Amino acid sequence: MAATALVRTALNATSRVATAPPGRVAFELFRHPIRRSRVRPAERELHDRAVTEELSVNGKRVRVYRWGDGRRPVLMVHGWRSRASRFTPYVQGLLDLGMSPVAFDAPAHGDSGGRTVTILEYRELIVRLAERHGPFEAAVAHSFGACCTFLAMAEGVPVGRLVSIAGLAEFGYLVEAFTAIMGLNERLERDLARRIEQVLLPGAGDVWQRFDATRRPELVTAPILAVHDEGDDVVPYRQSQLLRAAYGEEQLRLITTRGLGHRRVLSEPTVVDNVLAFLAEPLPVAPASLPGVAVGVAVDAAVDAPVEPSEPVVPAA
Image 1: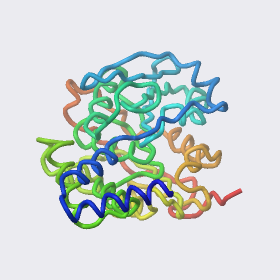
Image 2: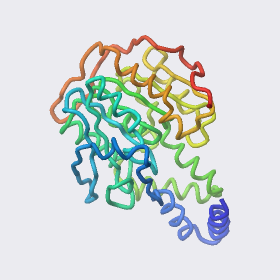
Image 3: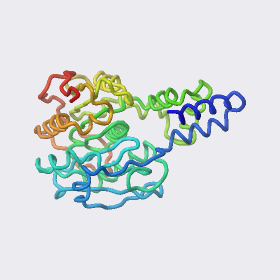
């Protein structure tokens, strides 16, 4: 916290003199994960059982992990400063259901190469994994990974159903949250947004609209389970409320937890059980394999919930 306060003071003070130098510093801090998560001891056994392969995106080496025999593949997409091994609580359950988990360490994360990653690189990886191992019967995504998965589905990756855990809905919230954490002044916030548009994601169009998971709900027709802790201080609970408002209660079932925060909610056994129960429900229509992953798959969005939407089902231990 002291280091963050020091950087905050320096950035805001220098921005009053000239925007460019502190703006570049803020931008570099924004786009670099800074540190890599390690495989936890409890994750090691299942993590090491995975078959690994490698892809490359924009010259960055990407580690891919696969379990099972390849039938009924399920994609797992981690968030910022996380890694694929965080999904090991789901792996055995998915295997027991006859499914084949597929995951990856995004660039600048886990055992992959690179120092930076963008939402478009996440999207590219999801597209290529769908071409290689899909179509995916389901996807399970956490935090920023949920935003990336919504984007890939809206732009054509066929996925039978989606689980969003502590999911980010609004791409613009990333700037809002970073600005608040770093205590940036308005000048630096505007400069950061401009650099994201022009330097990080040039030619991507209106990034605030295109990457917002609530803007094109008609393009994501799969059943959705959203799980979010009401006290999440990284991605606020409101982000999942926005998703429910966009997709409707018939398509999106929202489970609310208490006392788990942003990270524990992913591995909480009751959450894992609810996710696996959702994935075990019969799909009304199987996801279609489409050449070039050109369009999304249409499925009946009505599903029966094991718990009531928005009911707090997982209190803190």
